[in-house]
Image 1 (cartoon, one colour):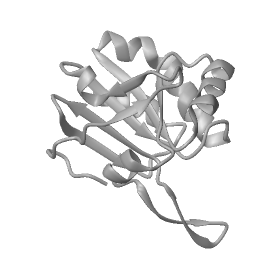
Image 2 (tube, helix red, strand yellow; image 1 turned 45 degrees about the vertical axis):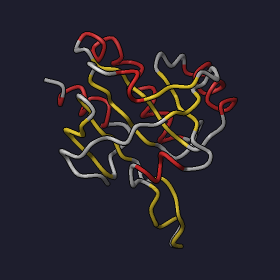
Image 3 (cartoon, helix red, strand yellow; image 1 turned 90 degrees about the horizontal axis):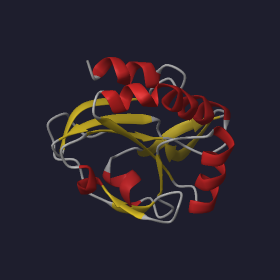
Image 4 (cartoon, one colour; image 1 turned 90 degrees about the vertical axis):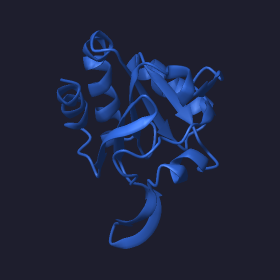
Length: 150
């Protein structure tokens, strides 16, 4: 996980509509950048739906929500449509951004070590990481992030 106060690595990744998005596109806004394992899975769906439910409150506080996983653009589009997600989902199949944000790590899966995305959420403001939360609980993370916005 990256440290608070460090510069957030910029990126250029396609969203669920195939449009390239950069972190620098959101200059002047607070960005909730959350990393998750896989579209359409139980925990990841709970987390995404939580962010969707609270999305108007995030916007009122001047924040945007961006989810990142290694899923394809097509998978993200289906995920967005199934759950009516109002925010950006970025596709990182090459793991470039996932690794840059230090969330590709060894974890246990059914008792066996495996590499994967550790559910992590960053709050970014003016290009700097101001909050970082690793191994977050999917169901609790959206409300936690709303509270962090003050």
